[in-house]
Amino acid sequence: MPITAVIFDFFGTLTPSTPAHVWDEHAARSAAPLGIPARTWRTALDTSFPERATGSLGDLTATFRTLARRCGVEPSDEALAAACSARLTAQRELFVLREDAVPALSELRARGMRVGVLSDCTAELAETWPRLPVADLVDARVLSCEEGRRKPDPELFRLIAHHLDATAQECLYIGDGGGHELTGASRCGMRAFLLRATDWADNDAHTREDDWAGPSVSSLSEVPALLDQPGGDTTRGSS
Image (cartoon, rainbow, N blue to C red):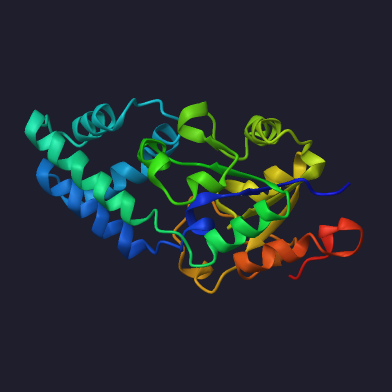
């Protein structure tokens, strides 16, 4: 079946990979106003990711208040505001796109493809989304924090396909493998490709399927060429 829509993961796919030391430094910046040791705060952020990524702790202020209390701190409003501001600034630094992201998405759109983004993310991405340069190139987005579900929940893949007016079989999925997304997409009938960019090994991602045995590409600029394969058969990509 011909491809009519291409769906991308966000972090580590449309954006460069984020190594552990960057997450550590970012955690330290939001921990400082709360008076919480950076390592303790990083652990609190990591262990709460399933809750934060599904929006179950509320907005950023409510989330940080809950996490601070779990760390044994009752934050003042001023400290909480400073911590949230530091977090937003740090997160927005991670929203910088790969150099080939906009050209690749623009080419797909020019070729008549509908483009979607499906991301396991926290409230910061949802809040910043309208101001991202990729926003105008994306026909539909599905964010875990807004849907209350995480990959590889099949409902997320069905939902993004529906928003793109496509069947799962008409969708190509590109991701770095976080959250078992490639297996999830494949099980729903999508044709999934791992983005194994040069920085792939540096990425500190949640539950990434490093043992993916399916096809891969090494850059986003290779994605439009997948549409040119004989008969529209994207299962023959490089690995």
